[in-house]
Image (cartoon, rainbow, N blue to C red; front, side):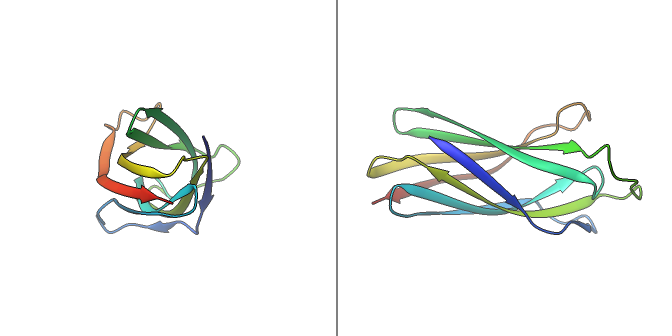
Length: 116
């Protein structure tokens, strides 16, 4: 299985909620979400693990050292596409993680998805 994360334009969050929703397709699951981050100047990356019928996706936010940033909470929309699923129904979990920030991992989605 492989994952590709496409990051949208970050904004300053006004205490917005983290979220994610998922949809199964032909050998894929597409996750659309918003990650709340310590600042708007973070890069998102993803990893995926599968154990039987359980799939866990981790969306990690790390500070972008190339950018000078305002000190405000960020909200970063993303689309994560996971490829390589055999047809079937899976229990999907999506977690947002924040290495090196002191922020706790946020569990943002637990859902069953069907892949064709």
